[in-house]
Figure 1 (cartoon, rainbow over the protein chains, first blue to last red):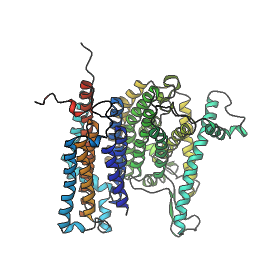
Figure 2: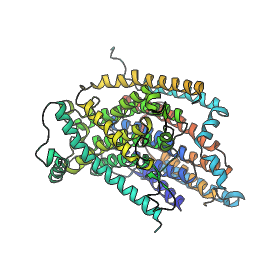
Figure 3: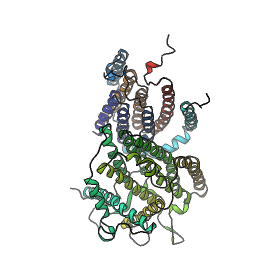
Figure 4: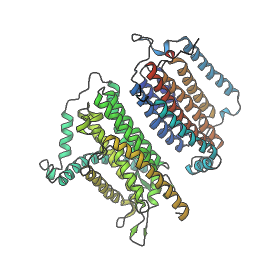
Length: 175
Length: 341
Length: 100
C-alpha cells in the first residue's frame, strides 16, 4: 500500500520535473521525487540507503543545482522572448522521444508478464530482512568485496572536484 | 485504543509543544543573558523578571502587516519559511530523551521515551540539517531582492561548508559507540570510571566536541558566524523581505535548530539521560539540564565574541576545521583499533 | 507484499520519464535533471533486487551510483556554467558551431 503512495508520488513529481517551465520548480519537484524514492527504500528495508539518498541527492546535489540555476538566472527557455508555448509541445524530436519512452515501458511490461518470477514478492522472510538492513553489513561489503570500487570512486571524486573548479573558474583578467 | 499508541501520540504532542515553548523560552534566555553580559537589566516590565516577554514578542509579530514584495514568487515566498520550520521540527524526531519506561506500570510493554528509535538516527540528524538549507536558499531567491539573494547564497554556502566537519565529528562518535542509533550511543555512555567520572564521550573526544560545537554554531548561523544575517552588512540577509508570522517562523526555526544541536550534543557527548541521582526514566531532567547549559553557552558565545568576516569564516571552515576534523577521525579510529574500545 | 514486477515497472516508468525529459527539454539544466531521474530509477531497481535476493550488494552498488552521480552532476554543471559564459544561453541549439 505504501508502495503505491510513494510510487505515485515519484511518478507525479518526475512528470513535474520535465513539465515545469521554471527550472527552480523542476529542481524542487526533483527533490520531492528523491524524498518519495527514499520512502520506497525504507519500505524495501534499506534505511541506510534512504537516508544517504536524502543527504547526498536532496541535500547536496540539488542545492548545487539550485545555486547554478540562481546564479545563471536564465529563467525561461524559449525560442524567443515572446514565445509563450509550453516546453513540452515544441520539438518534433521531442515527440519521437516521447514515443520511444512509452514503447520502452510497454515492452518491459510485456516482457515481465511473460517472466516466471515477476510475481514473486519482494519481501522475503524476516531473517533475510535482518541481514539486509544492517549498516555494519554494508560497511563490511564495501571494504572487502568492493574495495577497488571504493578506492576508484574516491579518485573519481577528487578528479571531479578539480575538474569542476577548473571549468567554472573565470578567466584571469590578463587581457 | 491500545495504551501504547496513546502513549506514543502523547510523547509526540509533548515533544511538539516543548519545542514551541523552548523557542519562546530561548527568546527570554537570550535577552536576559545578553543583558547580564552587557551589564544592564533586560526585560523587566512584562511579568515578573520579564518572563512574559516572549508572549509580548509573539503578539507583536502577529499584529504586524504581512508584506510580500510584488515581484516575489508567491509560491516559493510562502513555502520557504514552512520548509525551514519543518526541517527544524523533523530533526527532533530522531532525538531520544529518556530510557524505556512503563509509566508506573500503566503500559504492558515498556516504551522508549523519544519520538522514534531509528537505527540510523545520526544520519537522519545530518540529513535534516542538509534540508534546512532549502528554506534559506528559497527565501533569498523568492524575495527577488539583492540583499536577500546575497544573504541567502552566503548563508547556504556557509551551512554546507560546515556540514562536512559536522559530519566528521559525528563519525568520530559513531566509531567510539559502534552504532548509528542515538539511543545506543547514549547507552554506551552509562556508568562511571573510578566511581565518580562519568563515561561521557566528552572526555574521550574533547576535540571532537569542540569541532562539533563550532560546526553546530556555524550550521545554525549564530554568532560569531552570523555574517549572512548581520544587520550592519546585509540589512537582514535572507529574511529581509519577510514580516509578521513568516519572519516569526524563520525566527522560530533558528531557535529550534539551536535546541536540536544542543540536544544532539547532549546525547552524543554529555551522556544524555544518565546522571547520578534520578532514576533512568526520569533522565529527561538531566537532558534538560545539560541542554540548558549548552544553550546558555550558545548565547554566551554570541554576546562575547566578535563576528567573523565572510571570507575568514569560509577559510576557517575549509582550511582549519575540516583538516582538524579529519585528523580527529583518524586518531579516533587508531585509538579504537589499538585500545579495542 | 508487492511483487518485484511492480518495482520494475515503476523503475521503467521513471526511466522513461527521464529519457523523455532529455529529448523534450531545451534547457541544459533540465536535461541534467532528467539524467538524475534516470540514475535514480536504476538505483530503485538495484535496491529492489538486492532485497529480493536477501543480500546488501544492491545497497552497496547504489552507494557507488550515488557517488558517481554526484561527481557527474558537479562536472556537468561546471560545463554548463562555462558554456553559459560564452553564449549567454542555456539552449542546446545555441551550441551548433560543429554542425555542418
